[in-house]
Length: 559
Image (cartoon, rainbow, N blue to C red; front, side, top):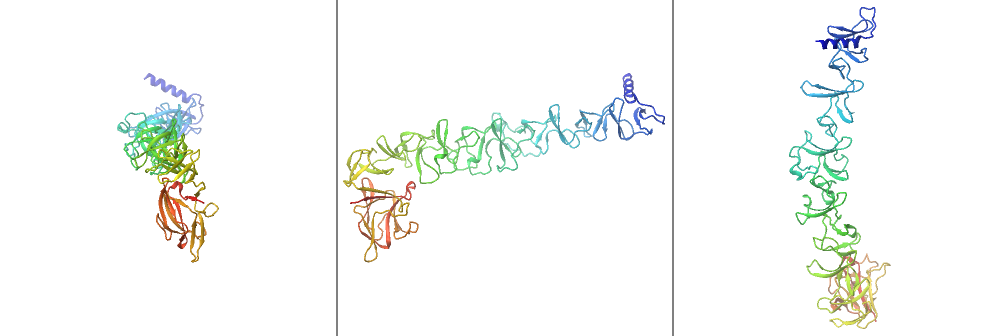
């Protein structure tokens, strides 16, 4: 009782001290009435619903009954304490009508902070439109403030918003076992930036339902709810290429380097349940754009050179690799066994598509060697040698004719005879000098029409008395058709493009007598001399090899 009396006396002093007396019915200022305090204006009228200062300089509120409010809301957005003093720069905990605790913060003006963020003691809080401190998921579930109302940043393991549909394909960063633990307690991992905003794929991207973010130098993947992902995820929108995917481990981190894992379930074309992939520092798997593998697709990793197909797997075995975008220029590479899957170099036996092993030689850059190496002849890496019982064969490599034996050895400064009795004489380099002692051997190697538009001459064309064209071949004319087709064209046409393909095949054409023989291990088409050719046709040879398309081989022996 004594304490209450002392407090009442003190309050009275704070309110009335220094107030002047007025001759009116009541003095202006504070007065005690019915154990409460009231305030009279200069006219002696009691004040209602207004703020007034006491002698202590503190603001107090007169309610609708004219009494000083205590421990109550005042003027809607303010609060007064047990002494009636306006609360400023303070937290206040109240209890709602439903019995729930509610926190408010009153600024320096005494008004509640509402509908905004407020930094208090180096921590950020958000208050709703009524001034209540918000907790949990707020602002369209883009921020999380926790039970204490403090804005969360960085990694947070949380229960998702109430409207979230559970997806088990999530992961805890750093957790062992991945999905075994993740989500079983209903919580998932999110990442909030320094501004408190949850990371989700941006609305303007075309990357589908997933997006990546680099955090502390590491890429992570999030769905459109902001939940951390694991496994293969299509992060680029399309679904037909391994290049659209990234792989995230049980720690949520994008894989970097070599990994043997199952391919994405929605992609086809893989040989096994588990495949090797290599992920660059940006998390993207190495892969070619198409099945047209080029030297530009070669990738050097830790001192070794690899070639990845369009499915992202390193190739192995003997492979045709194109030099550029076209189909005509290519070379052979050997990538070893499946366990090696990298470029091999030097001399070795290599299994070809037919299952037979053949000698190959690969340069330091991995390309199949073309030319003479250690006295043996190679073309795109493959050893060239006489086969099918032949002792010697003449091969044309890089515009030179080389004579080799059944071992592929180049015959230098030699005179040899084939199984058909053809005598080859070679120079010190192994190139052909004469054939059957004819030293005027001309090799014509080029298109049917050269760059200038001129026809390649292999003889003369005249008309006879009947108006038919007569092809006068030089004696000994031979046309090399190895791996080739025979075509007959309208020879009278003015240009290459206007020529008409009249016939195709290794067979006699009208009035053209042709016979296949084997000379020096090569198949030769022998055309009879001075054949009369009806319908103005002309016989040439084109190779079917893509590398030598649009090219013909003509061996012309001129007397």
